[in-house]
Length: 132
Ligand SMILES: [Zn+2]
Figure 1: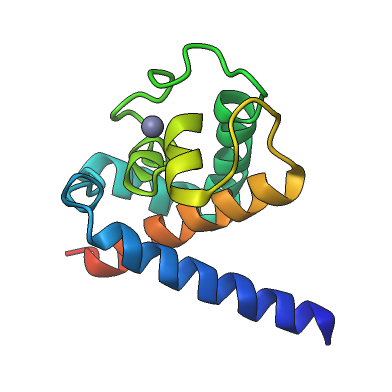
Figure 2: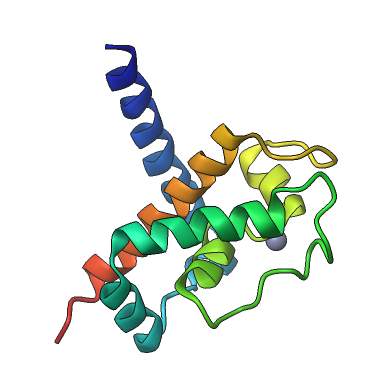
């Protein structure tokens, strides 16, 4: 029962956050490239989800990430683009948009949540751009 409620809470948070992000001209302009879409479809959801967890953990998870503010490339992997679109690209954006303070490591729960947001954004992009 508690799990069902937690899942519903998270789904609501994701929907609200994507809605909030859609009002930012900067965030809303990001879309996946054709190459990223083909890559995401070829790898499948489970692998992209693992990449999202690893990339968030490695690049923004530490208390003081290396090159913070410039550590996330603009392109080259669907997760990179999704991070800019969802404001999970650096700790400054994560603090501003997701209210997680800078200067401490992300908890596993926070990393999971942000990865779920990244995945929801990627899935939405794929749905909006079906294979021709
Ligand atoms: Zn950022």
